[in-house]
Image (cartoon, rainbow, N blue to C red; front, side, top):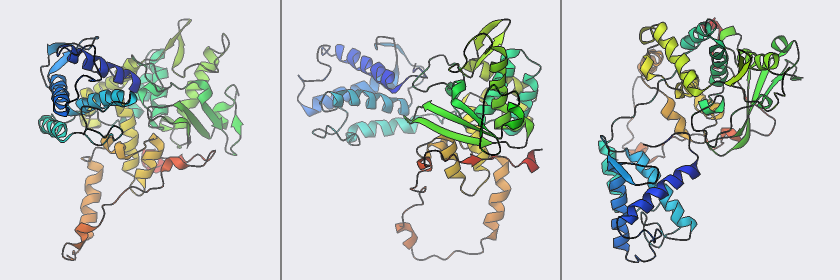
Length: 409
């Protein structure tokens, strides 16, 4: 089974072990780069054989095919495996057997017979089982529920709210089972400013009343961008406010831990309980979200069942909240969530009731269409603005207020 939370290097190494183990069965254990196989057709046969094995088997830690899979591996994972092995070939100046010969550096030249194999798999793949987005109503109930639970839940509730307003991945604000490239936030990565944009120190006794803005610095991320900053201001809603949430996180650490040790580089998920320090884990974050959904009848109240929630639901909820605002929401979503492409669309659920009325009214306003004989078919499709939202000049932090306090009071 594929592991989550790995870095790109770790994944590539895992796929390369599987490639070596595959070649061993063909008597090529000492020749992983196929130096002794100059014939292009033979190399293609090996490549297709590796793809078929990947589709059908689970693998052990050494990369050997261990058990037959009850369901075939999805095509997206197979593409990752091909990319990982091909990259290892290119790093050593060798031509990838999965790609057209004599085009070593062209990563987009997958061999047509390999591509057709993957396309065939895609037709048989099951529909993606994506985690559903959390809603503001769920987050409000979660916050109230957390106040009646142990210390870990109270800290986790504030982290979830804080992470939501920055479209964070769980690995950015809590401890995950297999930490990857993404760096967890520390207290030093969270900065507060007052209404005149002056810095407010973490140990300021009036931090909660002074703080008007919060800025988070993402030191290293999955997308490879380092030291990327995003800011939010007070929303005016106590239980749905990024500043209130992060003030609670920092103030709790300052009050409980700073008297006994330096907290400057301490992960924001750290909390005290019974005189001992702990860190909020992703399993606890998931537990709190699902428990909220179960207690408050999530299927009827939020339109989400307990089983449909995951840690990605937080990031998805942020994207959904902005998408429902219309206008230039795509740019805001990309900027807030630090997406480098339209990949954020995977987090958007098109079938939500809040869109239904708007769509019908907009469609009803259109009286007629002018058919210009197919000329429109030759026009280029609409694209996102070429001016990437992450090209914000240093020191200029965009401010987002996803929710209107008048509708969420």
